[in-house]
Length: 306
Image (cartoon, rainbow, N blue to C red):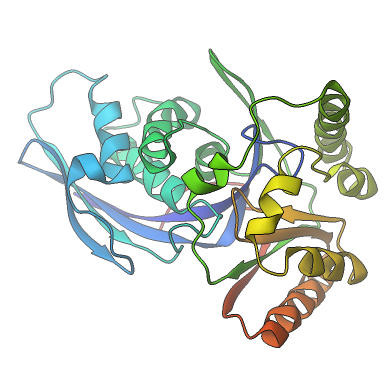
């Protein structure tokens, strides 16, 4: 008994919501096969498209799966996982989250869904902890729930899913350099000024309000990062130019996707999103820097069975 899954890429932080906001992409992602087998435990039998460890305890999908199985009565069978990576590690669009979310979703389906999608987030977070040293949910939550997600609290875990306005599109450009999440975290300050904090939580509230009221202009005004972007943007080649180009071509807002180096822009309508993609591409073409680009609707479903 086996199922094949699409495990979507995600954009975390969304400028103003460091570690608490994320969205799910529709056409960028990995594929995974999860199989129920007689041998107990969890084994990763195949990884295509990336050089990642097959050892269960060293692979994010294995760690997430084990975290979930620990909470269940002892099973007299086990699971095999095959991973087909299309999201590059260190790209800033949730590579580890896609694997973590896919593993727990697939096993949950094969067990007859003992857990809700929201319940699965806590297990997928353990994969993120292995990848970055920090059990954050801003990628795994949208990967599992679809749409936009807000992590209101980590202790206890409280996640709110928010529908996306119909015409909202994301454009994401990934310059082909690897930026480890742990390295991108190391440049952050542990304390922020009250002035910056006030500005930041005003934008978080504005973005959430904009999503609920489908106010595209408000969404755009709220996509501003006062705290993290000024420190991380220096790690990303051509960041300021890409961001400026996105605005000049109709973006509502633009910023660092996750911990980078990918840069995202949100826009209203596919035509504008495509135009932004072309303009972003031109910047990296001129810099002679290899890149990948994605234009995507917001995925309302999250991980899905193929």
